[in-house]
Length: 82
Image (cartoon, rainbow, N blue to C red; front, side, top):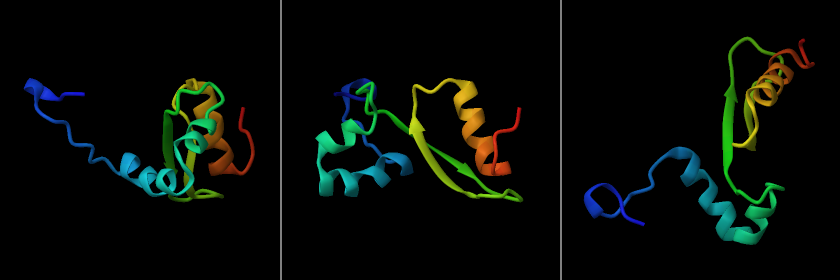
């Protein structure tokens, strides 16, 4: 893989770096199995502030907007808000 102008690409975002230790510990096969569609693309969603269940929630990046909205609503209101 090459970056801009064919130069090496540095991976330096927090989400990527946060996954490195667990992948090294449990292996790439384990990490890939977290996503049933086998895309291995994960996304962290942070919910904070005046909410019922603040925290960091992880889901597949292939989830649609409704699924992400549901995840955030469950964390914020401790139930699904419709």
